[in-house]
Length: 211
Image (cartoon, rainbow, N blue to C red; front, side, top):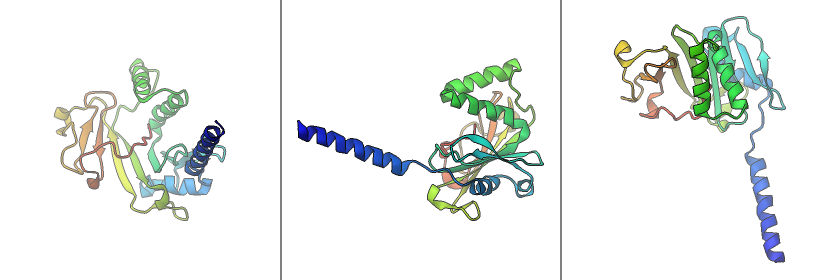
């Protein structure tokens, strides 16, 4: 019996140690800002607003900007470095997604809730084409001094509400690697996906989404 108890205790200790080793630390604010800005077009970086996290993990504004661009720093709860940039008109939609996630809502429930709110007029969503810029890579490939990610990849998403394959001429499923295609065709959240060619036909490789 003593042997069993000792074994269980050792397993629990090993589990705690492993969790501590795999728990990701929050990047310093200046590093969060550097990497987040690299998601945005060069011309927009100097004046962009940057959202990120306090040392305690609270979502906050790290830098107040002067132009129309918002950049998101890496989420410390997610493995890998994922940063995004988008125009302010998309922020109500993104902010609502963060609220629902904080409430413990799953992906489907979050999508259903926002769709209902957009259709009712409660939640603003751009009616004109709006772009989301993504930049990502491995934790160990981040260069803190510059914010660059070695071997980093980029994805571009252009929201085109209610667009269809017929109205755009785009395929509605991944086709040739690197070729743009239309996801969620015919819905308010229809968007053109532009993935790196080396992602092949997959559209879900960057598992950590901004919205």
